[in-house]
Every structure is written in C-alpha cells, then in structure tokens.
Length: 244
Picture 1 (spheres, rainbow, N blue to C red):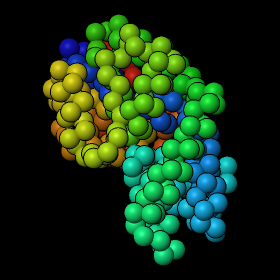
Picture 2: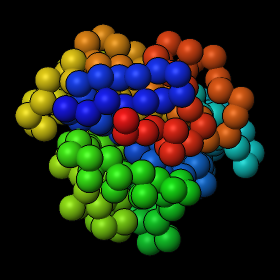
Picture 3: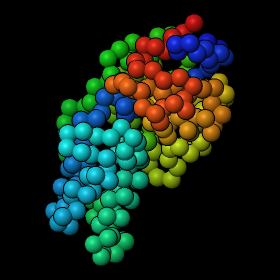
Picture 4: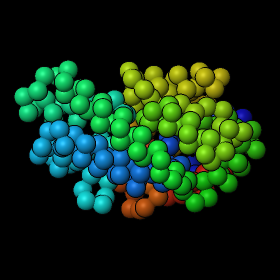
C-alpha cells in the first residue's frame, strides 16, 4: 500500500486511484462544446427555434462550456433525455422526441469522431506513469460512453498504465456510489483503499458516499470552484499528487 500526499493532506494505505476523464485527464472542453453545438443544430433543423435554449440547458454559452453544466458532467443518456424534454415541449410525443434526440446525438458523435482527439492535460501522462510505477492500480471512471473512454485510452496508449477504463451507457450515473463500488470491484480493491480524482461535484459526492479513502478535486483553471470544497483537497495540477 502507498501513501499519497496532496498539499497538506496525506492519504495512507492506498491501493488504487480512479480518475474522471473529461476535465480531469482530458482537455475536452472544445470537443464537448462542438458536440453540443452539432447536436443542437441537428435538432433545430427538425424543430426550428429549439437550438439556442437547448444549448443553454447543456451549459453552452457562445464559446464557453460550464464545467458544472449538463454537457460537461452528465452522461450521454442524461443529455439525450434533456434534449428530448425540450423537443416534447413543442407538442411531439415522448417516443418521437426521444427518437429525434437519439438520432441527433448519434449523427453528431459520428462527425466529431472524425476530428482530432482531445489532448491530455500537460504533465498528466508522467503523473500516471509515476503512480503506476509505485504499484498503484489505476483506472478511469467516466460519465462518457464506454466507447469514448476506450478510444481515449487507445489513442494515448494507456493500456499498460490503466487497469480499468469504465464509462457509462445506460442505468447508473454519477453521483451514484454504486458506480464507484463497481469500479473498485473490477480492480479488486476495497473502496476505503481507493482515491477518486475528478473535476465535478458528482465525482466528489460519489466517492464520499461510497466510503472512498478520499476525494481529490481538480480545477486546471483556478480559482477553485465552490462545488469542489467537499473534496478532501482541491488541486490545480495532477503533479500535486505525490507518492510519499
């Protein structure tokens, strides 16, 4: 077991660390914003006038994306349901509204997949390598679809560093603690020997409710937002995670 230090906080007897993907390891703001805009345009083409309010519900404002907004932290399924709800307000049936939203997301994702992958945040790969060399089990626990997580791992050649690449399809989503417990079970570690690192309130709440060894909030662009104050410690760079 390993002791991890973040600033003035020490986490002892740690066996594993789980990382969120978007906004934690992957600098995916531009990609997420582009995806949301594409989805909104596709739906607006079928339901005129819905595009702008839909983007607002996603947390998109011009060229910026709200780090705590739906599209930044929600699962694909949650975003689809939100989009379908806006469509349903125009008088369409719920089944038709869901079908319109689903088609838009599917088509938009196919277009975005042809773009260059989002980069990892500077220094992140070196940190993951150092933690792995210390004998820790490492994994990704993301609200993104499993295919997106696998693509990220493969593109950045993380297969030898990560023992888990877990995304969300349907059913459970953050902050349900069962997700964290399932991830720990797959890694073969106890929750109270596992840390969670994430940039969203859902990451922190999930870990706290699951009885994790601790939660580390990360915000790459300070100031640290108030919703990360429930974490045991908040950092601005993964290099602040040190093996003692």
